[in-house]
Image 1 (spheres, protein in one colour):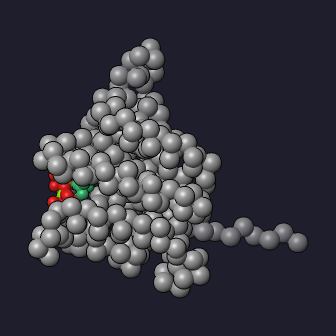
Image 2: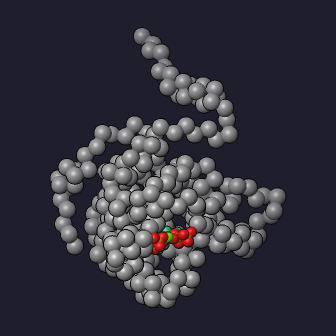
Image 3: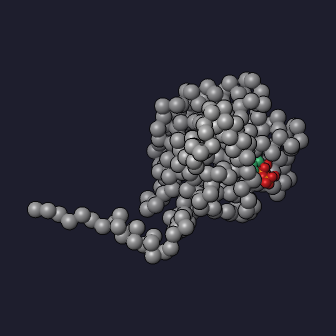
Length: 265
Ligand code: IPE
Ligand code: IPE
Ligand code: MG
């Protein structure tokens, strides 16, 4: 395990404080294969380099004040890749847990898994569950790892559990569905970042992302370092989220909240 002291990390990431940091950032970490191909390397080298980048971005998220991060690591559709690559991606997750768990714990990162553990090989499934259990009381950053995750699968799951719970149709609201998703209890992502130039969700957080800001960049995931991440957060800070309202309404809301109460003597 590489030792990065708090001091050296602070120096390498020092950036002006963000005025409006998103609370929840979700990332579609894409482009590992193309990153490798560009260098004449096997796809596996891209995936390995991708995990190196992940450690940098998780630390940067803590530093930049992001409270919740959700990363897309393996989709329900990724099972259709060649068997060797699927096995490798499983092995890489196991290696990341072994290598990073203690340090993430010390940093105050709470690891959660979203997706289906059924269908994942027993030893890996146990490791994922243990990592979640071990870090469950940490509060600095919630890190949702979407592994064997699909947004449609998540909704099917939610509907099955709602029916199982015997909830009457007329009692089902958006809140009910939120409570039965893997992300139950967490706010929706404010920002979804996708690397590698693709502009699609690929079945990621399709319910929760209804009003997320989307940021895409041509940069492949292994090269999307802390500075690029910071730029995405700055870009988010310049967006105007309307949630269906007009600009005038948004301005009125902003000035209402910005108004300083008069002092009484
Ligand atoms: C993202 O990189 C990692 C996973 C989907 C697991 P890709 O493997 O999709 O890389 P490209 O898109 O083929 O370049
Ligand atoms: C999305 O990337 C899944 C992950 C990043 C884990 P893909 O590379 O699988 O997406 P598509 O197939 O190009 O849409
Ligand atoms: Mg891809």
